[in-house]
Length: 449
View (cartoon, one colour):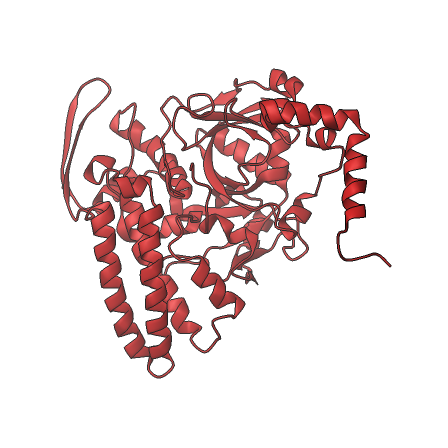
């Protein structure tokens, strides 16, 4: 029977084992001097990975979410700005990311306080309650959450509500919001055990302060604004005084209500061809819930390629940091030779990575191109939102091997699905727990800190 405690004899054995392998000592010399990314980089893959594509849509500059986790908002607005730029004859244009963020923070505060009212009879160490307390005021989100905000609050151009220090660097603002909402959670939970109406009255008092904090940090969202612009040919246009809802109705050209979330989740808990959702994954009370349809990765790629060939970028969610070189702007599942470097097998299947907390959706971006050879994708063009100093002026090349392993979700038009899967969208969804990794994008989404 083995000994549970590590002893001196074990340390001596570890040291002797390391010292007996010259290749490990050579790796030590290299890594301590040059760093892992330079030493383990698979140079043959770098040389065979390119930035040319048979279908390429983008001819614009990338955006920059800076030190925030708003990737899902940026990716959504970057998708919507493509037809908007065409309609207005503009080479560059951005919807206001701060405007969408403001309403997400306020709506999500209401959503989570309602969740605390609904769970007021549970102990604080209940896993769901504990998860809600830990995930307050996160920046992340999902496609359906983005659609819910656009439909309820509309949109404005960036100049009508520009970036602020806090929208680009959300840490301090979020700390204040978390404190405020945890205090609010105690207030509404205590009241809800006796009187739900009283709990909601107190909730409104908390939300009044949340609104105040958001105005201080992000500015007050405009109710109306004058929209005018000069197009790429220097022709002047004025569209008059618009509300955010009117602006969205005129310049959101895509039928976003027709889009569905397609995921590739290979775990047994998520059967193919079934819909599922994640408990307490949302932001707007009363909006349609986040709902996924689980499909094969190959079908997801077919649908994404079809959308791109039709001239439309594709919103997607992935585990961004795995096997990535931000300097080179490349993703490949074998980009770093870690097994060879460490002399061990570090591989896990996509399912195992989800089950053992090695992988989750951490970032949302856009596909803006694909390279097809005889109809089969070789690599994908990606528009990121980390600014133009990363990748190739902010764009990346994703080799197709990476897609299968680390892409989990796309948003696509319902009609691109086979009829049998369109019918499957109406099935009652399987409910996954609040802490499931398929809801991770709405939590601590990857920010460029």
